[in-house]
Amino acid sequence: MQSQSLSSVIGTIAGVISSDRFPTGERAALRRMTPRQPPPLAFYRFALSHLPDGWDHSKESQKDWMTLMAGISIMSPNAHDPKSSLGRVLAEKNYSEARLERLLSDSAVGDVRRILVLRVARFLGSKSSPFNWVHAARLLLTQDDEKLMAVREQIAKDYYGSKRETE
Image 1: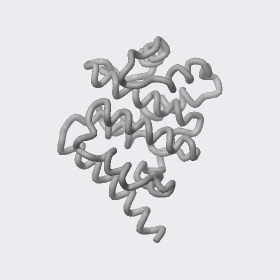
Image 2 (image 1 turned 180 degrees about the vertical axis):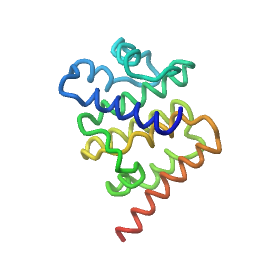
Image 3 (image 1 turned 180 degrees about the horizontal axis):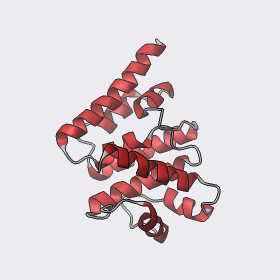
């Protein structure tokens, strides 16, 4: 999936889930999703209408999209801000370096990475601090090791760049 189309998909997902017209029961069902449990029917109802082709090409991909939808739901209605990088927002809200290291480490794969992303969503949601969910999407959806390393590096650079500015 190309960057522009991923941005468009994430913007659509966040807009729909955060909308006043989106049923609160559906949002609550999406919010409760975890990668280790089967998704609720609300997930399939939403996915078939709003996710890009291929979202379900593997169980791993399906879990990544579940995680993105759950995270955005957790933070709704104040979830997505395309102008705020994930690393910068984490730094501004004093997210610990130890937690950031776990999130960005090579050992954070599969369900571990997904759970860590959901923890980020809960942390930033509790502080009403939206961020650009495209960054979290890339962290979850990128399969190529070299590209994934670049995603991790950018999040770290944004985090430490923001930390340096505030010192």
